[in-house]
Image (cartoon, rainbow, N blue to C red; front, top):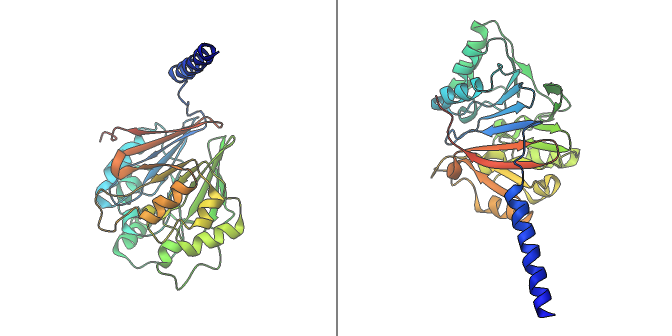
Length: 287
């Protein structure tokens, strides 16, 4: 009997090894998202399986050309550019994108902000006689025929008197294709997360963690509502803010999410065919 048990165990192990060896990588027939390593900032490109794409944020100023190079690699010009909020680490690299993609829609939070970089963005658009579309909860659009995008935040009335109203009124997007959803949380903080939890519809297999993994976001209630299997944190190496916070990493561990970080891995690519999801580190985009 012991021999039979050992033989059965060996056979089971061999079967598992064979399955792993012949497992097919996930084809991005629904979408592929490249979270770019732009240092202490955010930039991502969502590419539909049919070739259309969406750019979400442009990183800090010195990342603009990198973001543009990655956007051009998608083939078709992006159908929409989303600026989640007007901080320099998210819109600082806007100029190359605005100049290169003059026919592309631009969606932003509509939060008045007096920074130099935000005024520069507005001046560039005025010079091109272009307008900004304002994102509000319930706004929906598509990236190609299969990828549906819904704006979950900001909503009226906008958050006020928070630690950072610009962060708290970030654009939060839910991207859906097939049975897979991805939540892109901008720099949303606790006030926004409370509203999002109250509004429901948060479950997603993929989460771009809010505010670079800071301690001001990723509450236990929010993470429990999203319950991602994959979490991506965009932050700079040895950044002065201490991102990601230990509390955020602990919270993600408690819900069983596999964490990928641009400061440790470089660009992170997440692919889905509408059923399965796969995340890998990638070589930097050539410029």
